[in-house]
Image (tube, rainbow, N blue to C red; front, top):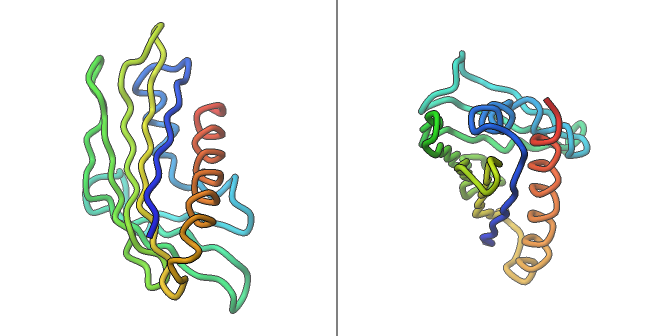
Length: 146
């Protein structure tokens, strides 16, 4: 199990940063062989289920997540979302916050606890670096593209 966090600022209003970060289907755009779908009817709320399917054919697996905290930002108040990972292979949680940042920017904090079943703890360092890279790239792309 690994835990890591990322911090970013973006020249966006809070609500726009939130909208981009919660465009669930776009989360797979920066991860090869990954497609993200929302398994429950919208709009997103507590209880919404999101599935990230990664791989091809028989080598694919689902990262099933449920929204357990859904607090969209107000005009000048922070927002927070937490997803609990409930897949057979991938466990843990991911959460992010958007808050007012310096110079009218939005400050984003992304935290993640990641467990891959069957992966020995000797691989935690590699898993942490890979997670930071993949999720950092995903957050960057989501914040840059409308």
